[in-house]
Amino acid sequence: MNPTSRVSLLTGLALAFAVASGCTVRPLLATPDVAPGSVAAAPALSSIAVSPVDTRYAQEVRNHLIFLLNGGAGQPANARYTLDLSVTRSTSAAAQIQVGTDNEPTAGTLTMIASYTIKDGQTAQPVATGRRQVTSAYDVPRQEFAALRAVRDAEDRAARELAELLRLALGQDLARIGGQS
Image (cartoon, rainbow, N blue to C red; front, side, top):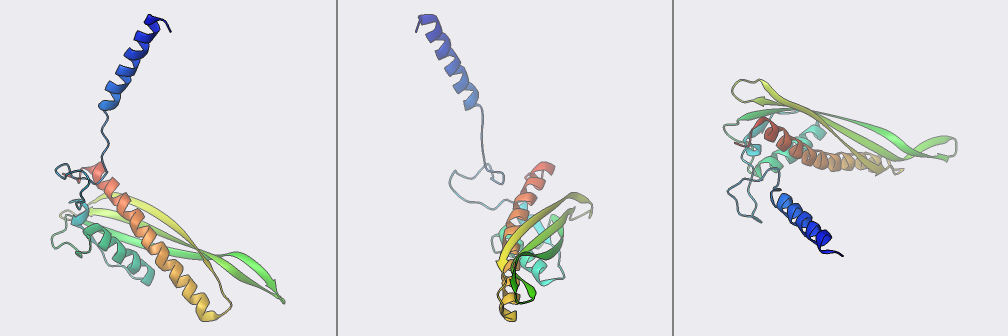
């Protein structure tokens, strides 16, 4: 390797390190005054009050979301934002087997969809909207109660996953609108 190519290689390497050192990466919901490695609740997320819902599976999503937003502390007393949440679900047979003359489903898929609107707590004006979807598979046993319980367990799994997705989406929405100040 000649000296000119070695110098240009070292110069290019130094330039690459200089550019890379200017990049900063931090968690989306981090607060700047918290030491690395420690955990702190994002102030904007803990200032969201989740409106009541009307179905069992929507209540599961709401309960998990409130826990995730506030670290188990419940709803905030003076919320800066209000979250209107609408949750729907549908089930479908994923596989069928032939037993005698009936086609009986042996596996199912549950899809849970949440649509949300974040509103300003003082003006009630929408500041962000979104939609998230989760799919959960389950087995359908022959016993009727066991089949009903399998659907409920799939709803509960989907509700937990959907709440986690919603927390991330809400954090992104609030960061975009400047809610982290």
